[in-house]
Image (cartoon, rainbow over all chains, first blue to last red):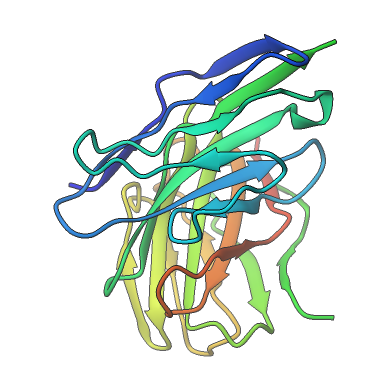
Length: 109
Length: 113
């Protein structure tokens, strides 16, 4: 079965420190992976997708098919990064979109 | 103003009653989704639909039903068979093209008393 696992429910780091939010997936086909973010009192929205290989708000994520991982990283955390982060896997063809349990990131001043 | 709209924002129902949550989109998206969001459990997929007149069960479909009679609309009914219906419900839609993102509504908080 397709599954997304985010092992950390809570993550707290100091401003300026590096951040890594972990995501592992289980899927036998070619994955489409995304990171979504939910800021306080805002809608869930896309942060980045693996196919773009770009940096958004300083965040990057690399797909590692050997380790079936898609970890989200930022070298220097900012207070405005505090939010709920979800990793998501889309199954092409079926259009099924599954999410991990989410990680609440808190950046301390 | 394009987007995806869920209504109502808050909903209260008595135990044993069915209730229907509305989700409408004007993004011309084929795929639509319903999720349940509970603290510490992330977003769990209830139902999804690839196209009009078609829908599939997600991971926690028991006690829920949906319909997809129009491309723009994907209502979710929470039936009396759902054992723990009090939750925050999120609707989303996306294009069927590869690597496209999903767009989310603002959610409906259902409280069953």
